[in-house]
Image 1 (tube, rainbow, N blue to C red):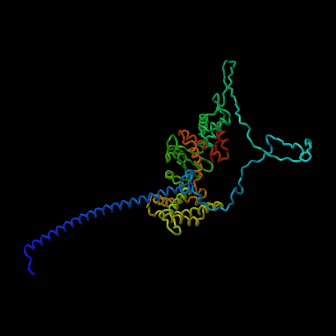
Image 2 (cartoon, rainbow, N blue to C red):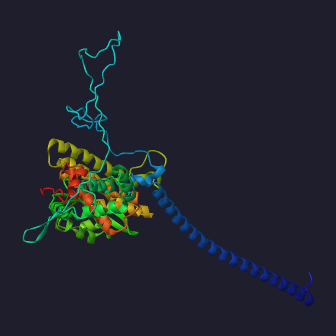
Image 3 (cartoon, rainbow, N blue to C red):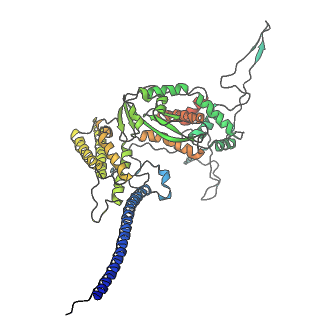
Amino acid sequence: MDAPTYAELTELVGALGRQLSALNKKFSQVEEKVLALEKTNRALTVEVVQLRAQNATLRARVVELEAQVGTSSKNSSTPPSADGLAKPAPKSLRTRSGRKPGGQAGHRGKTLTQVADPDVVVRHEPPACSGCGADLGGAPQTGVTRRQVFDLPPIELTVTEHQVISRRCGCGKITRGSAPDQVGAPVQYGPVASAIMVYLFHGQFLSRARTADALSELFNAPVSPATVAAATTRAAAGLGPFLQRITTSLAGAPVLHVDETSLRCQGHLAWLHSASTPAFTLLYAHPKRGKVAMDAMGVLPDFTGTLVHDAFAPYDKYTGATHSLCGAHVLRELVAVTDHHARGRCQHDGPPRWCWAAQVTGALLALVTAAVAATERGAGAVPADVLTAHANLIRHAALIGQHTDPVTKVDQKHRALARRILKRAEDYLRFATDLTVSFTNNAAERTIRMAKIRQKVSGCMRTMTGAKEFAAIRSYTATATKHGLTTLDALTRLTSANPWLPTTT
């Protein structure tokens, strides 16, 4: 084969050069595409990371919203009135007591009974014999059926005129008599009428205007909302000695229940504090919720007994007291954990998984049953072996609960609950070691429940002075009721300038 000529080699080199240029161009294009793809890949990687983070945030938010939707009066401190039409079906933690429904043996019922000496007797004679039609005017009486009707006569105001007489002595000096202290105006309502005003306003929670309308119709006399307000103010002004006495009694009580609730006043949020025992009730209105208001109330600074409350932190600042935490509050929190466990990330096919909150709930309720049985036996505490066994169940479950992975804020809240149960186990179990202490703080919650009714009727308290008057009068009537007095009788004594005062024991 002949060797290629110079011209052929030159042409071949040129062709190879052109191919190499084309390859270089294609390589540059491929390199640009690779760089573009790498850039796109980096952007997609960042976007995936962002979407995963956003997805985790949204999932956590869904869990939180589901927890909020699932919140009711059964598993939180939400009042039953807030459940609305979505009120959940009853799901009580109570077990069957074995007692039959209705009134129990020894229960004193309340019903009308006939009296031996009626005020009016109306005889209903037969007009004629039902057999032959003869007149029965002189016929002997063979029996009588007694039927009594209890009713009120028409209400009429009785006007008593107090004439203050002036007389001139022979020496020329004119001396005038003096009217009773409670008779100081030319025209006024007396103590019974004033007591009824306060009773309907702060006892039955009519609004001020409706109280005035009702009394105007009942008394057939003009009663204005201002008259009702004035009667309330005068009544509250006479409660100084009473409030001082029960404050001292509550400060020296062996067991005290305390609580607080919000109260709208003057367009702002105020607070109504309560302290109660089986014999005394004290309500106190204050702009603040914490220790400043509790100190101003005057009970807790000197209290050294057992303080039952709902774990609100300012109560723990009173180190001179022994603390007992409300079991009803923690049971509601535990139900919330159990509900979240059932519907949240722990849910799976097959039998329900174990939940630490359910174990704590079961152990607490078992101790409540044991405390009731011990009380009926006259013991002072739950048997030590029973207490130890259930306390260990509570502590072991709470230990697991506090190490739960905190994925969402709800999980963090549940971990905090477990830590609190571990830290305050002795305070939560106080009812089992001292049977004079109740399992719940219902005594204090019942005391402040009436304030919510007042607020629903009126919307708010117009002034802090009005809130303090409401608190003072409710303290007086609630304490009087605990001592067997009726609310109207106690208020009548108050408006007569002779308020009832309890003994200090």
